[in-house]
Image 1 (tube, rainbow, N blue to C red):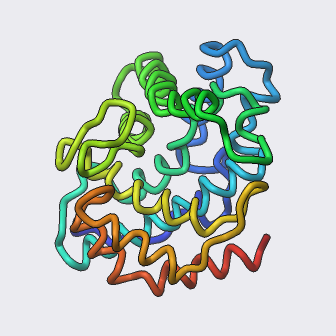
Image 2 (tube, rainbow, N blue to C red; image 1 turned 120 degrees about the vertical axis):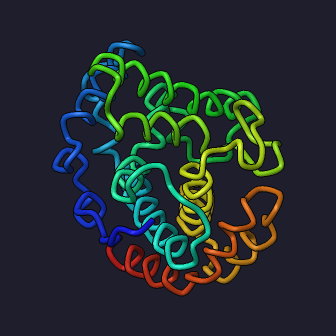
Length: 240
């Protein structure tokens, strides 16, 4: 990765529709609406509902920090431009548009059956993104990236993830980067059923996941910039 990596406007502003890929994002939402027979209000929820929208934007910021760390440490070569990955990462949970709202907004821990439904969202996101890609001629780097990170972001380095139990470097680097950022944001964010975990504790969770949940190189990259993660997290908490 030799290009200068600057922070994309999409994540600074948190406005997905105003991003350089706004037309593709609109097409993704329309595809989801048709695919899952959703009313327009629900189909727009990824960019308007606070939990999903804020999580998407924060995760994009953390992806950006990891991409910079990878570049500085020469620890891997992305096959997409960093700005494309940061923008695509903001759509990694688009498959959650297929999940009933009462499950996503439940103010308590999910039951086993409910979690089984949530576990469908990577495959649903992949279907939404690939269908949209085909509708638009099959040549969008952004939509290809969205499809990839949507499908693989819950896979684990040791092969114990979902939906397809893919392991190690068979998981695309884009999704391995996103996995660390996604977990960091999930643990440091409050939900109706849980409190925030302090930054220092999350660092240890990610360190402990080195070689099991996470790519060892990505954990090393994360540890090299964890203070930047803390600063970004403190900034996001201050704006809530």
